[in-house]
View: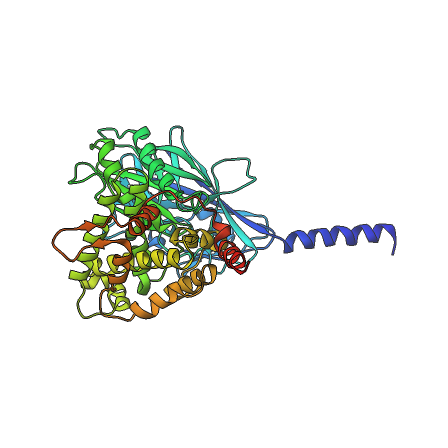
Length: 491
Ligand SMILES: [Zn+2]
């Protein structure tokens, strides 16, 4: 082979290896000050994507494509899909009529609020109909002065711009929320994470420092489980809603593009009411677990309901006694709401049946039982905190849906071996509220009489305090702690 041919082969191999490596499909979204229309440019990588679609049913109504692109034969639109006919490395563009999407009847894709728009990404993010496994999607925004964007995706590492995001591999039909417009943004740093907070503007103006300190306090409380926040950089969105009966009338955690918490608040209320509210601790506690399928929402809602009280006691927002009282009041509401259906049935049809109390507090009771049993079996070396720390270490963030059995089997693998699945087997298909009798006895909690009483027995009060106080353990030691203990006991 001549030197020249060798060189040519080397170049071809280099090109081929670039093509088979990670390829990037780049989107650039230009946002005008009027927020009436988005212009989206899509640039192909070395591997051409031929077809693009949106999972949002109505998105096609608001899609516009410049005639010149169509007539030039670069793209065509057929059957609700954009078909690309150009070459690798070329770009095409389209527009999205935001003004029409905001005012469309029954459109759940976008709504305007305080000089900003809240929308599903599916309104404007036309993705590859089938995304090649080794092609990633990056989205960059061109924003007018004074405007910001809040997305669930993680910032793209290594990008020269700080407003470039890597679209996650979570299923594209999982709901998400993107905000663009006049936003106050802040980065809240706690151990292990940088939470990306965005607060929509409002009249009267909400205090951004207040919102930051409210979220920081709740996020810091989460780090008391195992020394760090479970996810590296979640989206946190605060949307002022005006006067309401409480500081946080509603909130949600969505999973599309990564776990994100959205709080819809009464911005006229003082910071102290936000700090007293349980919602932030509850929503951020959802991030301790991956997304769990609806049949087992008792697990996700239960663990969040359990921790919303424990975390506030640990943060000093509630006395320990009040936190126990709130847990047991919740269990009573759960017991009162238990009728007929099994826990899985109640979870599956929670909205239809209005079975919220049954689902949330059965799950919280199971969390408490698991926590107490882990501590008992391990002589205090293990706990629900430690188990969830090990789960975060192995498996978070996760882009897929989990069943309750998968999570409980994994937690058993990561700890003493059978605590979680025993509880699952006993209660998932049971139509009774979990039996807290032996657990309450161990905790020295008498909740059967009309007066709620905590015993002064040192062992019981020590166990109660251990649950409500700050643990000092590292997640990676979940298993080795027990092994060390067992090895130690052989001496
Ligand atoms: Zn919840």
